[in-house]
Image (cartoon, rainbow, N blue to C red):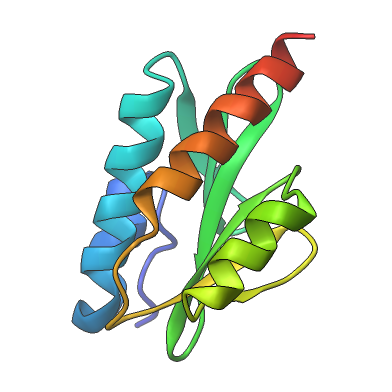
Length: 118
């Protein structure tokens, strides 16, 4: 019998491999405490947080959690890459054994919230 698809962020985390859960729990808390009025849910089969539109989200890969946000400026990408994180145009890959880059992610979330407020 197939496992039911997660309907909440907590269900998504609970159904994920144990090695990945600590990173996802930290990201969840970071998003929810940085912008407390977010709405969380599952969209495109991954956790998404909304605040006047899509704010941020994360997804699970084989060896990392990918944090996604619409605005990831080049200067922050460079700082993260110097600290050993892989980045994409709108993503940060956080390996299961890496610390979550709290300061940079808070900065990104706050900036995206302001953009979304328009």
